[in-house]
Image (cartoon, rainbow, N blue to C red; front, side, top):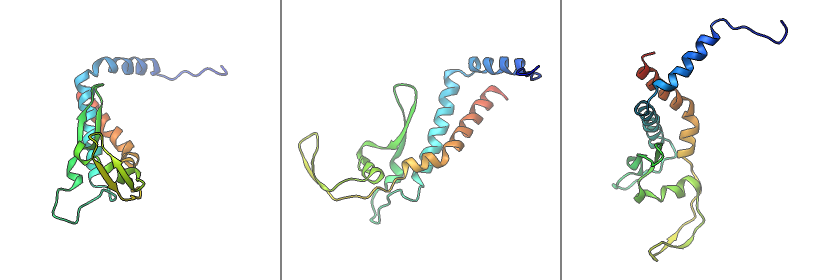
Length: 141
């Protein structure tokens, strides 16, 4: 018959896929999300554009964190006191800026040298693969 295809076992496969959603509980989803977030953190920390201090100070790469958000997702990025990494990621015009507390800061012009976005884009498929492995292990498949 034109326009009609019968794939042997397709109905059984669809039923199996639908039943998987019921088996993937919140704890397993959380474990998979955390796995992906921690893998991304490692890739951000070791990205070639990650700013590194020549002085004997704390290195920003040691302060990239994985934090669970209110909506059961994970955020990956710098600790709050390393907020200045956004200037390295996005670039910044030089000038004098006032903080929320009223303090003034002089900021030099900073060229963008992204390290978070490229780390994510380069590794998106591997992140998904690792999350999938966690789910498969959890389901015993």
